[in-house]
Length: 278
Image 1 (cartoon, helix red, strand yellow):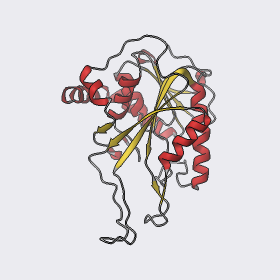
Image 2 (cartoon, rainbow, N blue to C red):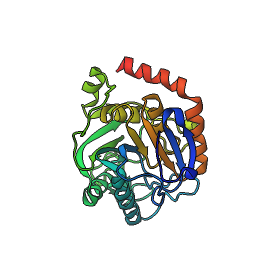
Image 3 (cartoon, rainbow, N blue to C red):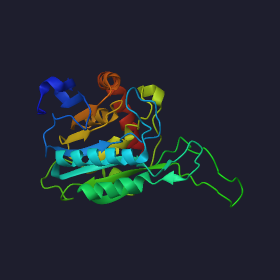
């Protein structure tokens, strides 16, 4: 059974699978015990002016980095000493609508902040979203004057708290083929369709599935501080992990509930096909 400070703040619970949704702001919520989480899998807002309900996704970059430092500092406190985090972030973001003025080094800045607040760096996985292209401009087309290079990939930064090796034993459910394939840090699978999950910036269930199987034991506690449409908790439910998701938007909490209740069998078949196909 999952334990939190205040049961009244739970928005949704699947007691039989150890899944909880908390409708709250991760920066201010106080219901999750410190030193209780085994793995964090998340993708925070990218600050690229995505149209969420109430969250402002186009703040000045300096303010975005301040927000990043605050949530990374809090997340670190919630992890066990041997806890890990898989953080999905972009390599960079444009400074302007048409790439004018160059790009902000989101990946570099985020990793630097994480290390400053106490996180330890392990590695970076490059995720090639093979079904989409992020090209929006070439700059000076066919000219060396001012070309823009845009990589259609995202990163999954793997960080940990104090010690990388887990301090206790547990049941691993990763297959030998998955282990060999996934420890090569270039992952290729399609992104998620925003319309299917009613969220403007979702990641596919394959992303948390791989992170959870590779970096946690069965029955471990997984946290997503920015739950969105609930993808991380869907993966937790299907992979027999306990899970807590924190989501500031009540609307997305409702979508996540529906996914957890209604998509289990569909996603279970999809996960089986991923395993069979490698």
